[in-house]
Length: 126
Image (cartoon, rainbow, N blue to C red):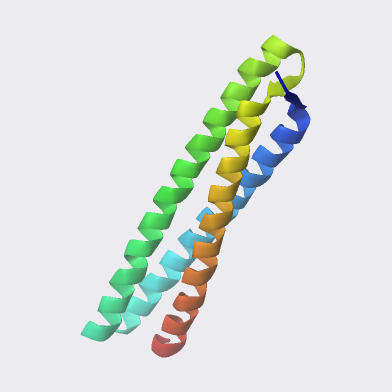
């Protein structure tokens, strides 16, 4: 059974969790900024666009939470495997970790696109 050093896996998991924490804080900041814009612009067009972003922020926060759960579950499985194989983790767990990493990278791309779209909204309504 092929195995990988748990330190490599642990470091990657911590990086992904830190990245998700960063984006979670950024979404909180963007939501607060959205509230300010909504308070200043009471027109229907502004509100419709604001609702779109509010929905996106809620959805992306949910995605962050789900990704964190996946990472922590993978981390737990690695810990169990670590105890059984003296510091090495089965490649199945590594493959799952890589899959989660790819999901986080896809999420990051979505956030970057949302941020660009949001900047245009702010330029229009601030």
